[in-house]
Length: 421
Image 1 (spheres, rainbow, N blue to C red):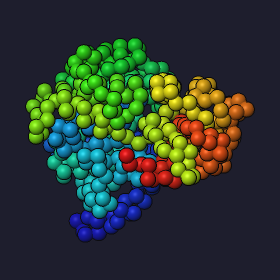
Image 2 (image 1 turned 180 degrees about the vertical axis):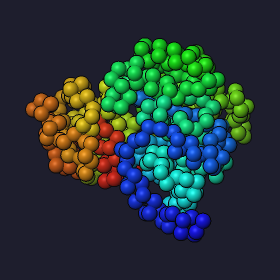
Image 3 (image 1 turned 135 degrees about the horizontal axis):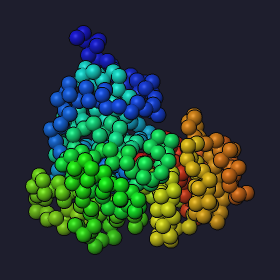
């Protein structure tokens, strides 16, 4: 193999250009490509414990809690999540930290050498995570599934545990139009003798998960009654729903401790691990508080983008007593807009600002979105325009920005200083 072929990407910019060419939203539902690369690298069964987190809502938060429990125990933890806000490097973390561009370029070349030229966008990043976690000799790797379960790239990896967060109606154009259909697709991540664990689920989803686990011979577990959360107000993620996510993550971690016999480092005990874990868990854009600045109002950022997520967001606002004076909202064109609009309008008695997305074809145009709202909705030419107007309208009162992780991505592109805790 020539040096030119080995160095498929000379710079990180070359790698990013290749990702852009692949297309963020391109999907090809098969495992054959990723299987071939992982087998060539002898990483089909990674040399570290693997947890896959599957579901509709709460995947990122549950993964973050699980990572925090591992780190509090003294483990080196690899975390793979999606989507990113500003740079793909946000998706692969070692003990919560991004890796530098040179490392990304090196591992991308390693993947190409193993036959990765035909991988899709999400497949390439998934394989890179597998490689990087091996390079760093992690003690635990957590892979958040992307879309579904049966065909998801993360399902191609041999895993030690599958964690199911709450399942709801989303991506109905790909996964199925009913909750049962969507759950069956996500249940496709199950394998014989592979433990799966869940907690809060709609009744229909829980029934399907149990049925599919029995069919394939997976060990089905529930979190309730197996662990208890610490009595503390120090939660890194806000909202009653986050306690359910933390409980699920803690129950999953307990299963892994039972398998691998991990013990807390130094002089800590398991109570310390639990308290540190729930306090240290954090992920951008999950009911994230941004203090007011000269140019920004006091903001709450939340990636709620479907009916279950908006129900959770509504409950979090009620629990905390936060009453947004303004809501900034935007969504993708494939969402159930008729269902979401009344939920958005119920979040505030004030103005609803609808910014036009920047260069995102999948986004619902702001002018068309406005036709579904009452006269309280105002179209803005950009997110910057909406932020400026919201500060003028809200004064010292809080503003809520929600509706899509891609809208949050535009905010973090404008204000990357809030991307880290």
